[in-house]
Amino acid sequence: MESPLNPHEEQWTVSGPIRPVAPEERIQELELNAHATVADAAPLGLAAFAATTFTLGSALAGWQGIVSPGGVPGVAGFVAAIPLLIIFGGIAQFIAAMWAFRKGSTFWATFLGVFGSLYATLGLSILLAGATGIPVGATTSDVATGVGVAMFAFIAGYLTWAAMGESSVMVWVAGFLTASLALLSAGFFIGGNFLIFWASGYAAIASALGAFYASAAIVINSTMQREVLPY
Image: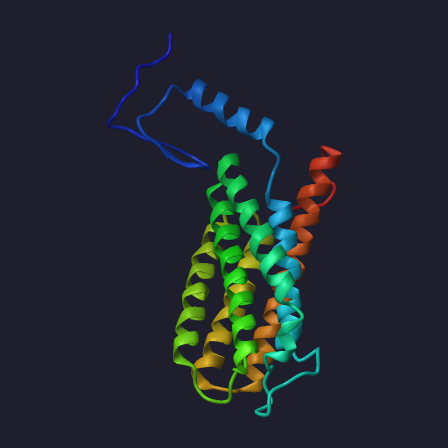
């Protein structure tokens, strides 16, 4: 006989707490149903995150060879990335986040939703900046942008902590992302320090490489129905 519901208790799942507590068998049945009938959105979201982050990181690291007069990446170095930012890094990643909600994964819904929104916003910002001739990484201090980027660095920071319950690969991804965003924020506060932007770019590249691996591991293991790549 199933135990009665107790409104004064809660039970934790990967989707979050359930109140009131349902019978254990019923909770397991619902979780199994979600996992069995909804594909994992994380590989798509990670692929979008990785491709976009790598592209931005390479621009910040100076790979594109286009810099502003102060020696930091200018807006021209990012213009080519606008479609990637908005469509793949923004829309595709955000769609994956919504399906992560359906899958019942609070971590993936938050991670992909936050950074999908960030990249779509960044793409629109660069588009507007290019239209008005405002450089990205100006030689003067940009406190407003620095504060905005710092907020996302803070979010990436606590997602790094949360990733400890997901996988060591995601700790790598979120950790280097935190470092990249923190350095980028500092670059905007200081104004036009090439070494800070350069370091931010390489930290972003490291995060992207980890995300590429995580995406590959999840989708390959799922397709092969066994662990081919450790994750």
